[in-house]
Amino acid sequence: MTRSLSDALSASSADDRRKAARALLRRPLLRAGAQPDEYRLVRKYEAELRAWFDLNTGWRLVVDSEVARLVKVSATTDDATHPARDTRSKLPFTRRRYVLTCLALATLERADAQITLGRLAAQVVMGAADPELGVDFTLSGREERSDLVAVVRLLLDLGVLSKVAGEEDAFVRDTGDVLYDVERRVLATMLATRRGPSTMDSLDLAELTVEVVPDTDELRNRAIRHRLTRQLLDEPVLYYDELDEDELAYLNRQRAALTRQVAELTGLVAEVRAEGIAMIDPADDLTDVRMPESGTEGHVTLLVAEYLAAQGETRISDLHDRVRELAREHRSYWRRNATEPGAETELVEQALTRLTALRLVQRDADHVRARPALARYALAEPTITTTR
Figure 1 (cartoon, helix red, strand yellow):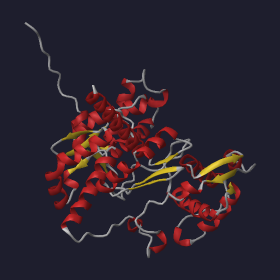
Figure 2 (figure 1 turned 180 degrees about the horizontal axis):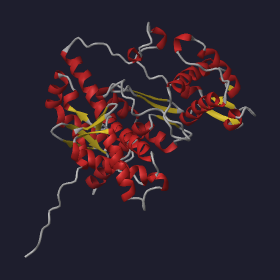
Figure 3 (figure 1 turned 180 degrees about the vertical axis):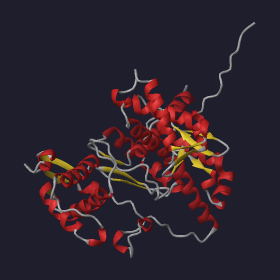
Figure 4 (figure 1 turned 120 degrees about the horizontal axis):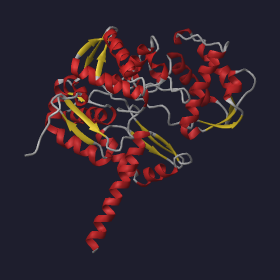
């Protein structure tokens, strides 16, 4: 009886620790007030989680009385398929919005405990005047006001700002202002870099996350383990042909151990193929891009994936023709405007954006090519069996 109780408690503890790790991977910044249950779990298993992330990924875990922050360093700095998005429209941020986000954070760092949107806007306009930033922002029109409001809504979602009074829509119309509290505990955890931006001599963002080159075999192996585990946690697929010789040799030796450690912490399941590894999430809540998904766009993406898996490579113009045919075939189920002239262009673009983000296809201006993991969406000829 005692042993059964001990086993049950151990299983419950492992399950709670897994929930805490998944909460951090799903949302690396948790606030005690906004995500109380997840925050409490992270704080309860803080020491174990910090040790695991430090050993296996090199990511820092910062926990205080208000915030739990997993300071993640991206496995790559050249992947543009998972952008910040407007919290309302879900449209990806433009370069100007990214610049405005950085300028807003810099302004808030110097601000008092409260700030109005108008005051924030004035400081951002001053910062944007620096010609080295390469942005034109004078707050002269509705579009520029909308850009700044999109940035503010992102900061509200992250918890950097808390609204006290007013509405952002009134600011866009130039008929009102908004007052915010500046949440300094959250603001202090936002920067996730290896070095401070003020120490850089150039505008090369890759320098922000560059790591010191290890000078011993043990440290080199640890750095490789960090890079591989980051990819297993962050990337939809880890492809062998994208690894260098040392990384591939290490993965061949330690593949079982690496995937087991990730699986034990997160509940992800390793799908190992000849071309690479994908960590599959049975619960389907650790991704920002799902497939398959309901709705017209989701169905189009699945059918495009099936088509590309069979074709291997095709011209994007041929995909337009294919989706135009599919729109007529499925017009009873797809949204009404899917059969209108030109609708196929948008549908194909949305499908390819999703498939690229999932690392299932590669594309250039005119062609798209299936990547190996897309084979899981291929349809084989049916096998009919009969009984005697």
